[in-house]
Amino acid sequence: MIKPLLGAGLLVAATLGFASSASAQAAGASGTLIVLNKRAATANIIDLASQRTLATLPTGQGPHELVVSSDGRVAVAANYGGQSAGSSLTIIDVPALVVARTIDLGRYTRPHGLAFLPGDSVLAVTSESTQSVALVHVADGTIVGTIATDQGGSHMLAIVGDGSRIYTSNIQGNSVTELDVAARRPLRVLDVPPQPEAITVTPAGDEVWVGSNALGTVSVLDAATGTIKGTIEGFAWPYRILITPDRRLAIVPDLRQHAVRFVDAVTLEEVERLDLPAAGPQGVALSADGGTLYLSLSQEDRVAAIDLATFEIVRYYGTGAGPDGVGVSPIVVSR
Image 1 (cartoon, rainbow, N blue to C red):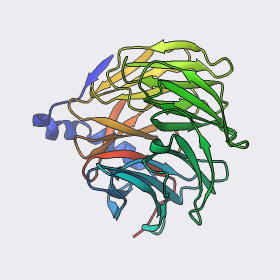
Image 2: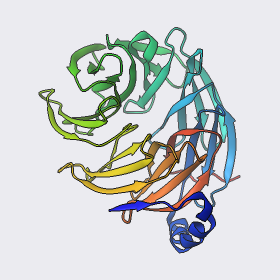
Image 3: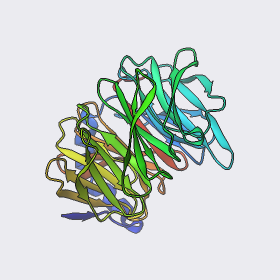
């Protein structure tokens, strides 16, 4: 079923129409939303219940991806840069509403995809320009190791639940590299459909999902064999892939079609599609209970909260210019 969003001219009516649902959602919304604004080079920290922006903090140029620690106290932005390459990470103390520090990555420029290793003391971040993943100690900013991908355009990464392996999507290499974290070396380079960007891996590590910008597909790889076991078609730009913790749904925002698609993660059949005319859907994050999707709308300078039981937008959160990476902390911050 396709549920088109009402046009801008009917925004007031749409807001009124969502009022009862939004009120119900507000009662259950708790915690803090962190949003990166690419064009503004800032991060918003927003109270989920009240929708108030608690702080707007500076980042480096072109902050793209965001990761939040498991306890919700630390958020990290990868500053990809603009015309000149970025080379830093912005570390945000969420409860204190401040930038705790900026980590200079030195020669490891164009940082983009990132994820905490188990324990949250070390962060893995892609360095697109050096075809590698840097392992960064968050507390002191030291680079404690690097792993070469040996492929062009290592843009995004995904990490298995136990932290033993990392997969990178290599846009220019038309490949995915599997990395052994402990041994600090690449294990395999897997051929995938051209221009892979979006990537995720199941917590158990048995499947790797990767999007193809060139073909508009999402491929599901058997991690043991490295072969494609299923394909989802019909995308224009499968920007990101998020699989719910219960493995019920795979969620894929399609940036160019201005839609978000919800796919049964087992059958690979589409369950729902939500059209968002000219909204530019990009970053995705789940609420702590897994019941709400937070989706950045880069062309509307706001984040939509989508109820995953009904696939309806129940709230909006205003942001800065060009929101992309989003994250959720369970911490309720008072100010």
